[in-house]
Image (cartoon, rainbow over all chains, first blue to last red; front, side, top):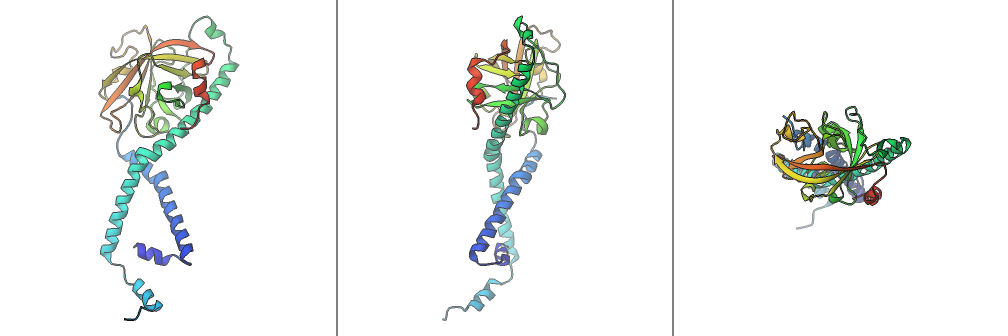
Length: 52
Length: 250
């Protein structure tokens, strides 16, 4: 899977490395900004409130 | 054996993807994502949210100071304590300072204890229980905040010591409370936010403030309650809080 991804990246080695780093940064940002907050909201209340 | 030619190398690199290796890579990736999530939940997100909440509280504090300067200070001069009308839902009406929680610890208080709109919000963190009294009012001014997660708002509340000051700033001025005692309760014991705590329907004579948060940290099994008694109101900024107003960043 990752070998295929690496093969699909165009350009010489340093361009591929730059592209790969950009992809990783994009994935991490997506996780931190959207995926993780959503998953956290599914994990049940961690609230500090009292209520019935 | 001759070394493989570049053409041979390319051919071997293009060998078909084996399904099992894809499964293995997916498993390793999902394991990494779970670890990343834990790091995000217990670390990164708290630092980011805490900084943003403190920064937003600093701005809110300045706005309230400007509003207070426009108001006639006569209300407080006679020794009476001004009481705000209960604000609309989600309205930011106060800023809370607790020096024991850190030199730069400050949070905006908004109406209601809604999880996403108030407690997890990047510009609030502390919510006022709708229907409980307002700052300085006789009865119980009850607020809630996270213990751990989403900025670790009240993670250090258990470090409060008898008499520790809690400052609540509104558009009228500064209300000072002093920490009195803790109580550990179950999440459904709403009596802690009654006008007279744990005495539903009783007529209050004291001005109390109640902080509710989760206990223990990173779990939500119990609630930690911190009761505070009103000590004074001042239209002027109390001298001991001035360095906390300017302190910023974590």
